[in-house]
Length: 409
Image (cartoon, rainbow, N blue to C red):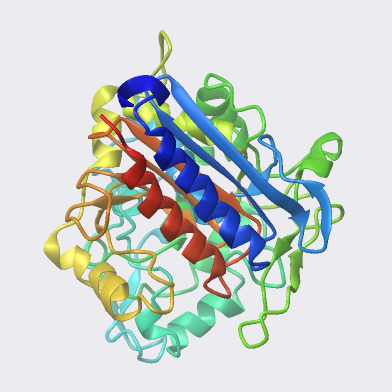
């Protein structure tokens, strides 16, 4: 066997296809695209259909809503600004984001919004990059007044109303106190969307324009964007959010006339991108190549190291660890990694079949994108079934479990 198939055994790849096909044949996931890459070898499976009631087949160039797997890719825009010294890690963000100056912080996370103390220090660029600036989606505080206020103000994606434009979004964010002192705790999601605004203001152009100029175009990621143009909309499947009780396929987003059929008011790096398996492969392979794409440098080697290695202290990590261990049944097992870099999970202990050092993230729309430096491996699994039920999460788990068994050196 050996290197005949790019470092995967023929039997292992056959079994990977069988496992994925079994999930599609079960009727729980209408279709998927899986890509595995090692070195110069790439293996792709496109299985099933675009709709749960049939329709066009899944293809290698099917465009998916990337959800939270947007985070690792969008983060590169901020890294470009660090490389160019247009941002510094420990600079306060106030000059660019005056809405976040002079913060108040809740005395207790579940307390009333006016029971606050002053922030001990300004919010820094590093706080945003590591998701520790003081606000986020906190699964341990779902009933708290601050979480209610975040939803009421429309500050997160996936609500019935889309997020407002960047300036109005920042204005609303600025009316809220922080949940935690800056730099104290890892908290999910909101920091990434703040970064979208920061990058756009520093770069002097829209977030998408800057990301495209500096990252997407140089990498040839021609199908990655914040919306799908009309001439490509036939490549976008329906996104389903099955009913948690009955399992019935509810349409969460149609392709034509849906949320991604026109440019959004807010280009959110927390979850707004659409992309393809090959585009994401180009990006993660660039990270494995320490910032190089062919002969062109996209990011510096130290920038890549910063992004893809753990940045959290044990104290900052406490909330993330609690979420992974105590709420893991709610996320269907996404999150047993240990660490967090910039915009992505980093494995700091061996909690499943993947080795320490693997980096990437999963998306609530049924997507999973990771790279593994030890095995020079990229794996991308894309579905159109949201994680209102465990089905796509189960496919993702079985994909990684089977992929790691297929490695043959």
